[in-house]
Length: 162
Image 1 (cartoon, rainbow, N blue to C red):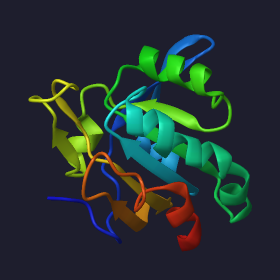
Image 2: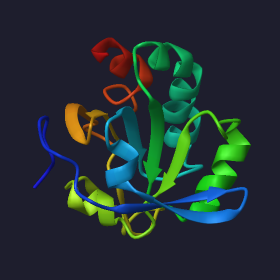
Image 3: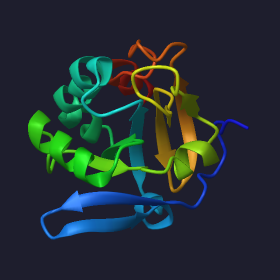
């Protein structure tokens, strides 16, 4: 079942590459008492994700934070090393959080997995979406109809919801 507006996020643990190695990031701690913008995508370095989806959030970071958002995070079904390399390659390191959902545990728990086993990505990935989460509850959810599009879940659309 796909998560909906008003639902609480499930407990999960992300991985994050930092200067001291890989760290666990508990969803319960990450979202508690804060307003967080989350966007998820099929994969780091993939064309739409790398060239369209992520850049909009980096470009609109200050405007999003100015609307009372505490943090912006991107989630992908990639390992933490790939997410860390992506953060460096895009200039987003220290600006937004690059969270790894390597085994798609969170992605499956929110019902937003994408079976890309027949395509270039070769397995279960995340659908492309964005959400606003306040104190662990979803207050806005935007799911793309097709993984190659980043309009409904893009930063410009989300900024209008804040």
